[in-house]
Length: 211
Image (cartoon, helix red, strand yellow):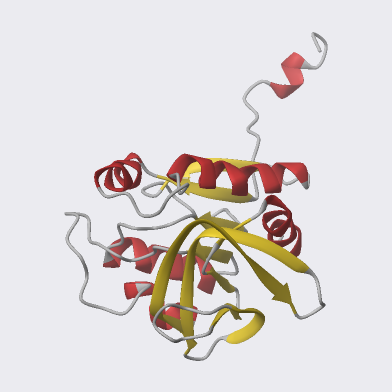
């Protein structure tokens, strides 16, 4: 290492993937809890751990940072979303990045005031999906089945999604309290909308499949 040090001086380690983090998001969830067992930092670490286990060098960056260099961007629960951030993420996708969105995206603006738009608000058209209903299931466990037959468990939160250009790649038959009986995992172009917080195996699969 001593002999290598002069050669490495001034060099920079560049990650190909990023998980977005924001103290403002953390504070928003602390102010208004969403569901039993739903923790912003724990869910963020789930996605980071899945990628590092797959050998993907993953940075944890603020939502205000430059994201242009990343091939994969995971944005867990972008509860606070304005047009500026939405446009930045859409530009990353246009330039070839894959963007993973999760539940509770686009609920409020930066002033913690609810948007009067179907979720995920300013990213709905880009993602090709809107949230018709949602159910904070907490510690209850449900199952998502992929097109290849693999099944994964999920908890905390379920969204009933309506495709608007997206392709359904997984689904679950789930008796929603309001009578809607299914929720989907949808993929459109290079954007993935994950409507539930799933287990580590499912997170591992998404990380492996999108880098």
